[in-house]
Length: 255
Image (cartoon, rainbow, N blue to C red):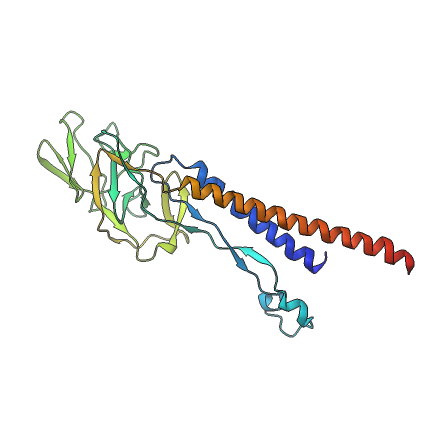
């Protein structure tokens, strides 16, 4: 493969990868608490620099062209989604910073999906996964199924018939770059280590959920741009392929 064809191929691959990520964002336009992925590309160094082989001979002019592009490391856009009122007392949203803490108390996960349900034992769990919602002590929150309605204060205090039962664990991490998506609206450490959690200052809104943070118009425009970039790079690959064909079949015969 020629150097120019290889550079064009890297551009096409990066554009396709970006298009895939943006399409996934658009598909989750109506997913509660969804955070879109930031899709981009980054410059790729020439082979000698990338592999640390400076002693290898090379063409200085070709190296000035670089090594094409690579798909940039995946990043999550944690922009706040709109708060939508649902009227359900077991729907919660966080206005501002922070996450609900759910799952195993020894290795919990984070989520912005506050759609809750009540398990048979009275535990508050995520409606989508069944994972228990944890309180400040890192324990599942339980309410009396026959004890009447519950109220949740803006600070996360849960009360039933005026009696305080628990307080939600609203947490954040010192650096959100450590977070990765693990499906079903959950976030965990990208190195599969227990998360280091700190207190969050967001406020809880009862009878509400946070909508997806995907901007439909912006996502559509970015998908179109990625598609055009891929088509342009495929066009360059085709053009260079035709030039190589002429080189072989015209000048090769003359030789």
